[in-house]
Length: 213
Image (tube, rainbow, N blue to C red; front, side):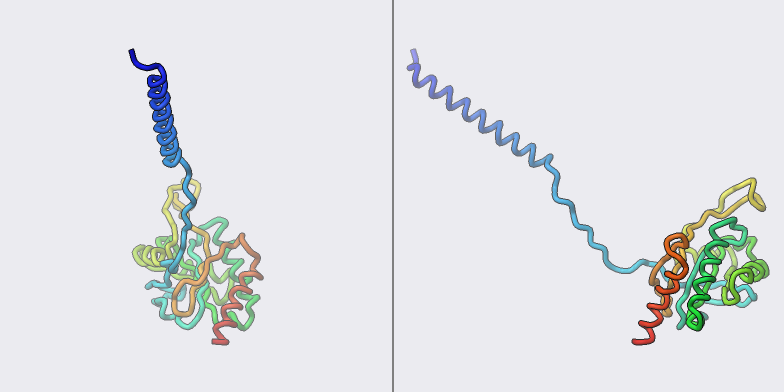
């Protein structure tokens, strides 16, 4: 018959080993499930947005981005049948241009249509005249307008709408792009995010920095 003390020692040893194994397994499971420290996201580089287009201005003259080289560009995409965002944004841009005073000559305000089917040069000429004498309306073929929107990474979509003129409307983003004199992207603004005085100040800051360099 086995010695009772030896038996109890072996039993305690087995229980201790089992407890140790369980503790290690539990610790390992916790380590697998425990949340890790958040990964820091580092952003670098520059947005792939550029002034690159072959279009026709509202006087019927073929133009490219090179025609505005050396000037800062304020660029907005929309269409003349737009019921709200476009007229509001163009009026906002016009106010900012007036606030710039003489410095407005160093800025090219461009309104590029996303609806070239209806927005002919003649239509664009009548439309931009309602906002500012320096505002340039740009149109072209379907392919040319699409290429311009792609260069600026502008969302736009043809959408059926029985209540709209000709049975369709154009959904589009409402951003104003500020482009550098070399055609590279500098900043983007939304009409509702700041008053026109702030937009004018932002442009003036860049003009002053350019004049100092």
